[in-house]
Length: 326
Ligand code: ASP
Image (cartoon, rainbow, N blue to C red; front, side):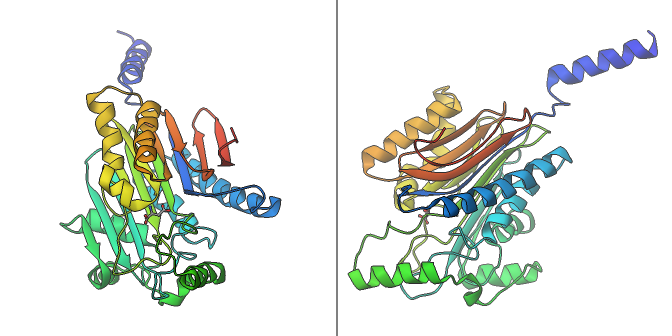
């Protein structure tokens, strides 16, 4: 056989097995919740969209350069954590006691390895700590001061709690305290998440949040819980959730979507829709983003808005906020 024929043959086999696939997709969210065009003026909308765009373009660049899904998830989430616009990292909501306590998790769909931190007060980028737990510890979830100690040992950036302070989130807490409301689902919007299919065919999902305004007693939501707020498995999908965490935990939301794809053979979109229906029937609110191994994506929610966007290697792209936007 001539050399040219051998190369052509090898190329065909690699293409057919998907080994050399360059197909990728990245989906992000910046939280779901009550949103209206009246309450969010054009300037604010543009500001959110510009930040979502910056995160997506960073992810796209990394994927074009051959980065892994895990690297992309972390670096994209870092952009959103560092922005005061979102309820993650700087800009996190306040607890009842007026401090910021952050949760994050990450899962690698190839190995099913996962890592999470919960209730941390001084780790600048909690998603990096979640990744360090996944890659450099024998555990899946670390909490509070223990998680901070581990993050320090790992050389991650530690900041004083006031680093996370934003005036508008603080005022939201004051309003809630004044009204002595028990339900705290008003100003939590802004949890961030990212799911990626990389060019090697691997999936990864990550979520980072400040939780819910006015939370008490060391409350932990779904975001750092693998199977509730975050899940990834190469044989099904990668998903990241945002919404009223207690419902997501009770539904085993993220894992249930994967299970419906595995056992009921639903496609990603239908599985996400069915899970959102379950959430609605229970009285919960929120949303979910997902990607599967073929680069199909989903962005489903039952609220009036969800900050969201995606980019595919095919060039398809969308950034949107409200439920009536394409
Ligand atoms: N799911 C988060 C929590 O319950 C909050 C959110 O996504 O809005 O902590």
